[in-house]
Length: 80
Image 1 (cartoon, one colour):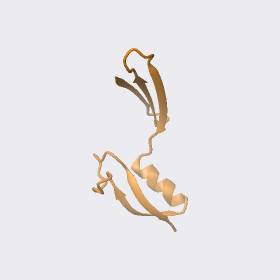
Image 2 (spheres, one colour):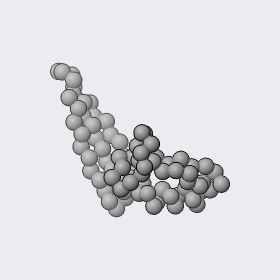
Image 3 (cartoon, helix red, strand yellow):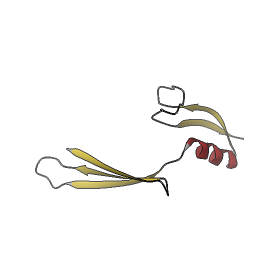
Image 4 (cartoon, one colour):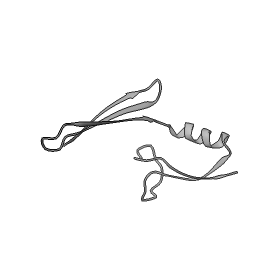
């Protein structure tokens, strides 16, 4: 069984994720991931000020358009 615990800190924009793995009678294993969340405007600004142009933004691996309800933020960019 795998369970997950998420705690988002809006001040740092970090999502603290912890997964707990339990297989049969084996001891439970825990793994952590602290993931920084980048909002669309921040991502655009970071790319711009680091010399990139955005060619396209898509919202999933099926190349659907990036929208407010997109599950992913995928950016195709190039160096200026």
